[in-house]
Length: 62
Image (cartoon, rainbow, N blue to C red; front, side, top):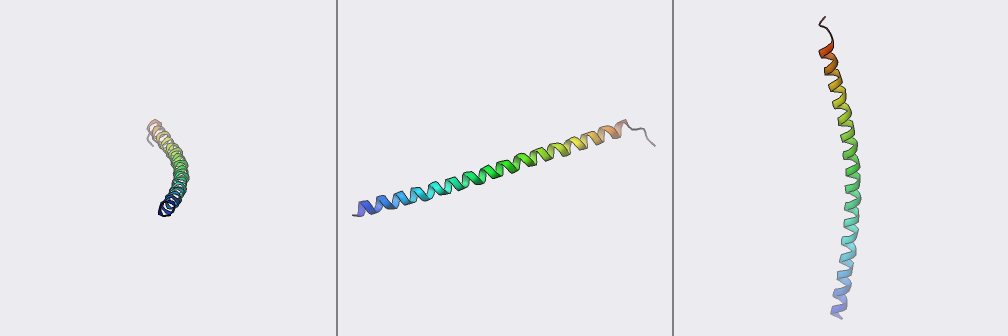
């Protein structure tokens, strides 16, 4: 009887760990999406800054 009890306990633990891994995967997916969005925004800001500094160099001093 103890062997069956241990087997059931091990199966419950596997199911629990599987659920935790799935949750971690979903969280990682969301973090990845956020990171890509931040990267896009950072690129846009860098472009604006580069355009601004490029225009500033081309404008005559007043």
